[in-house]
Amino acid sequence: MKKVPLFFGFSLLAVLLQLIVAPWLTIQGIKPDFPLVLILFVAILFGRVYGQLYGFGFGLIVDLIGMGSFLGLSALAKTIAGFLAGYLKDKRSRLNGFTFYTFVCFIIFIHYLVFFLINFHSAEYPVQFIVFRYILPDTLYTAVFFIVSDYIFSIEKI
Image (cartoon, rainbow, N blue to C red; front, side):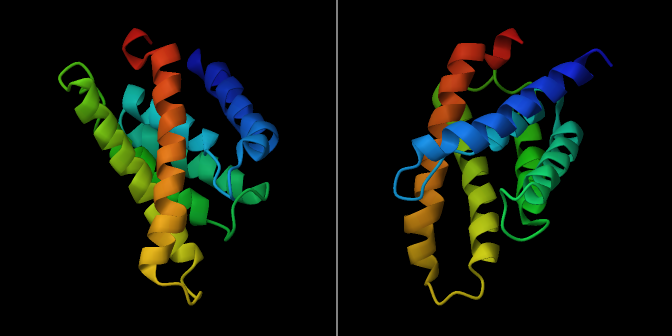
């Protein structure tokens, strides 16, 4: 129960970063997803159930305040990411850094794959274009912020 204010504070910070800082960091329409970084931290620290619940709640908030596109799409993508990241709970010490971050990048990739393929389902873009124009750049950009945040705040120390 003591962690609820902490979750609320970090959630508010992530939303503010997404609304205020992310537009300044946008490169050709590609920007980091700070709420996703926080969801990954929560899932890795507390497991699949907390990760998916936090991902769903945060995704729904993102959709409701207008940062998402279709209502429920961010909730779906972030729920999946939270669930998958929950599998990394207690695995950090057993995996070397490269393997751990590769799994994190894969989870971020799956998040964006779900998000953009559903978002562009009626567009005439080929899947390869969506992957190379949106999914991979967003994955790498968000992964960089996760890795830097992990270096600064270190999941192992929390």
